[in-house]
Length: 304
Picture 1 (cartoon, rainbow, N blue to C red):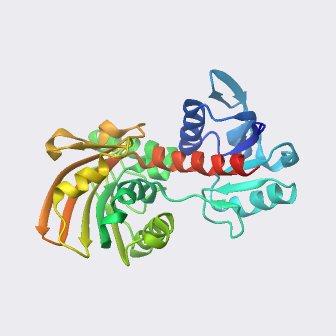
Picture 2: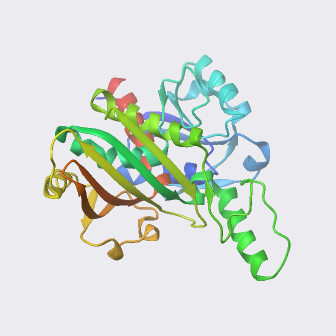
């Protein structure tokens, strides 16, 4: 029988770390010892996190003995990630990297937007899609807990006619929208193609805008197929996945309904032409990224 995995989670005090702890607990994943770590001393001092109804004291990652674990989930800031990954790898641990800043990690986790879209597209690959274009609005939760606080503070300041400060975002986000760069969209598109593998459509384009919403992304997905494809064909394919739910009208769904949920909501499939269809997609990117980490950890456990 495969023994449980002893694991360390770097970034346990962050929004992503919290989601990972929730997903591991909900899935009943075979965790042996779990160590909650923080990449900054200030975040570790006196901090605790909850896992399976138990409080875990948060330790400083820099001084941790990584030889005590087989897997390290790296949800640390990009600036700290490479150094912490080297410490873990030199102690013989396998690294699951969410920062995407480590070149030789055992597993590189994908962006939450890409994970959600891959779940939508995977059942459709048998229909031979040739191009995918995703345009949408992403919440501040994708940028972590500090981004949530910044949006809340900006909103309050605007109502009180006070000066607006911003550090996480380049401009004021409250009552505003901030388009992401082409490079950021291309990175998500690359993650999506990687997740879909050899059957990925030849063309994958992603354009995103950060909006003043705390949780839940909303995207318009346009699909081009090699052969004429009816909306019913998509619905039949999606019905095979328990992670997807379809609503006939977009008016019946909202991004906030997806907060903390694993399920992805699809709505309003429409035909642009016999070869092109469009659909609204809504999900929680943070939860989707955490679910991807769970799947990668399961691979490590299965292979050990």
